[in-house]
Length: 160
Image 1 (tube, helix red, strand yellow):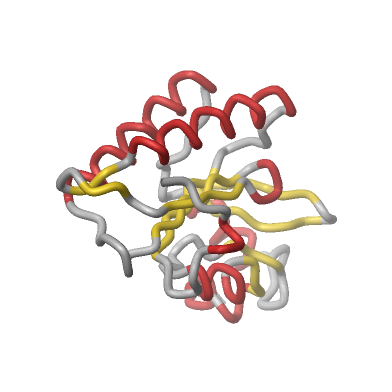
Image 2 (spheres, rainbow, N blue to C red; image 1 turned 180 degrees about the vertical axis):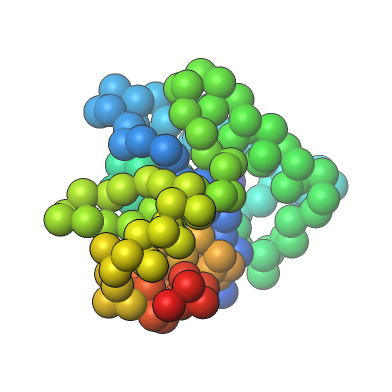
C-alpha cells in the first residue's frame, strides 16, 4: 500500500538509493509511476507493506516502510533491490554503488568515489563544514534530521 512519505511515522525504516546523476523531468515522471506500482504490489509473506517514497534533489530515491504494520523480510528486501536494479538498467544510472560519495559544492551535488573524496579532504577542498549526504541513516526521522548534513556530523568525519 502506497502511503505519502510525509504521512509515514518517524520510525519508518528507509533505504536510500543515490544516483550518479540528476534525473530528468521525464525520468522523474516515469520513476514516480514505477515506484508507486512497485510499492502497491510490495509484500512480505503475502502481507501488503505500508510504504512511501520521495525523490529529493531529483537525484536520490528514498523508499520508506512503516514496519509497525508489517516488518520487511529478506524476500521483500530482495524484491526491492531487484526493482532498483531494474531501474538502473532502464535509466542507465548507478543506484547501488556504495563507494560513491555525494556532497554539495557551490549549490551543485557532486558525485565522486571514496578515494577521490579522501584526496579532496586532504587537500582541504572539502572541509568539516562541507555539506554531505549520509546514506547510512536508517529511519525517517534520521533521514529528515541527519541525511543532508555537514561532514563533521556524519561518517565522513573520520577523514578529517
